[in-house]
Length: 381
Image (cartoon, rainbow, N blue to C red; front, side):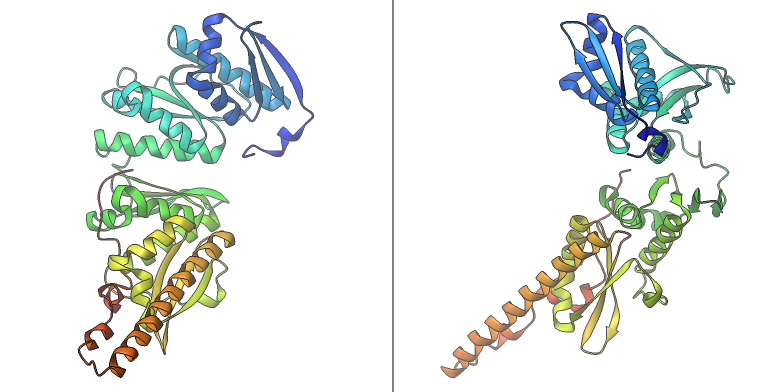
């Protein structure tokens, strides 16, 4: 569970009496709302429609959170939700959303907020607050994000990125080129990217950004031209390094100076005549390996008869998946070459020199393709 150890206390049951209308609202379509409350709070929820009772099972903290979330969901049915801003749960982040962006952030039938909730394990809705300053009243609305810290931060940045597309520079107008807001264990680092760097680091539909985030174990989101990198100090350093290597690939090979000292890398020697096959046309084969394994991979450069393909990732099991996939590609290439040589030798024995063109490497084996693959770029969060 993403919640703290205080939630490992003995489990008890609270029973709430609810109305028929509330029962349908708490359950949600196909039971999704009830499942969401359970996931975010850490409690177990059982809704009995005949007796109109809701059982909440868990530790004291889990039950308290679940009851609060249930009350918020029921309040949404009849009007704006009002929240007391004196909670002891440390489970709430509030983000000011400019009025002109509220519809955009909500999405059609609330779809955008629901997608963010699903991705980050949070509960989100617009609300009024007691005990909190009014801020720019009339110009903004307050979006409440409930959940564990990491999930809240990921959801917050996702919303900030959406707002920034609707109201440019709303959150990033005063960003400095390179900031780290907290030197403690948990914090956020921001980097201002140039337009060409941003499109490269984003990738088609955001695939490159998601890859770097998953491999580093860090939260990474681009808000306007600013990269927000959030997590522990170790995660932030790792993500920043991966991003630096990625951007260097635009101009040539990348060499890793501290390779032997790193604990987040697996080195796979690849025969030089197989490197083009492993990377694929425009790097597509290697991108598929990254997608399937949750790693960040690239070819470091020439070293004798083989190339060093580097697999980076904070999780060893993910790197092992990538290594297995890459070795499978190498073996495929070796088998193809052996079959081709046997075929050519047989034809040559029959006096046929006309098959010499079969000795040419397949177009996807071109060495020049070894480090590419980010040319397909586009929008997306």
